Image (cartoon, rainbow, N blue to C red; front, side, top):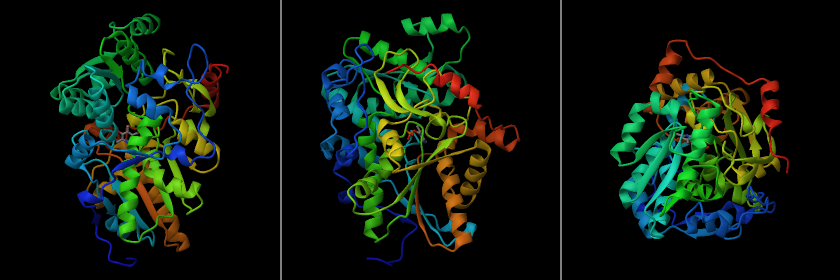
Length: 456
Ligand SMILES: *Cc1c(COP(=O)(O)O)cnc(C)c1O
């Protein structure tokens, strides 16, 4: 099949779509560290986790041996409404950059939520419904996850309660209304509805909230409401598992044309799209069957891999969630108002953290003005208006392609284009008006947040 003319878009047929998710942990010799119970500091069992999460999801969370999980038929049917996602050969971008590199991107923005988050939202809502639950709670920062979850819940007939970081709730009224259109109830966080919200408001009156704080509120409401569980859109092992559909599809599409990427690039907030994209390729690397370079791209304003520490930390501000060993800036770190809302998390997936710590993956951080420059160049030639989060990957893919131009190398680059940026036009406006700044935290600021890490 090699050398066959590669189309601009490679679609799989419906019957070529993955039927099982791939659990990368099964092929990791060095397993990621387990989640710890915040009270006992012992590894969390599936039973303990099922007080907060749906039972099946809790099982997926702790399973580090089963390589493949069959995707239930109902989820496959839902996937078919917006998948397979196209793998695009970026001929126009290559031409524009005059690079010998071959650039591919996996585009996950072809659904109303505008991002890859729907891949896990439908899975999590499905297991909640199957368990006979009434509803789920969650947090949302920029709003993509809340939108995806509200779509999945509407489809399955589940209640959906979203705590939305207050500054986003106010700045992104359209996202909020999309969620309400799908029947979700949306509360600005911190709120007076929960104990932890009231405590945070008493300590920080006028605060516009953070993801860590909204997580605490959502967890509290889930455990105190009959028939409810909490769901999370990134970071967790179960989310990495569901997102493996991105990488499995991308690999199947490339295999179909005999194409092998040399370098695979993705943006990293909590790590779910990157973890999903690289999963089957990293599996081959871990089993010694092939070699690839992997690059995580994070914002310079919230650089958990490149400037954080690898340690146990809280996943939320209220310290009610399990502790995760991960690259973290400290759960008390409040990132500046970076526009890539989906990348403003203090920690990182324990799986990706372990791979990075073992030297199997690289990481770079980029400044947001250069990210928006790349986004605009990309939009003008490839047509898609990218989300600011996704544009971090675009920036580094373009840098790699330009390096190939200097060296004459014909590398094959694959990157994840996680979503569209229609709800981010205020950020684009700032960029166009020259009002965007590049805030980079100082070493002192980072040290202050890391000093407050729990001692374990
Ligand atoms: C949430 C989001 C991200 C970052 O989340 P990960 O879990 O790191 O993948 C990236 N891009 C878009 C469009 C998002 O919505």
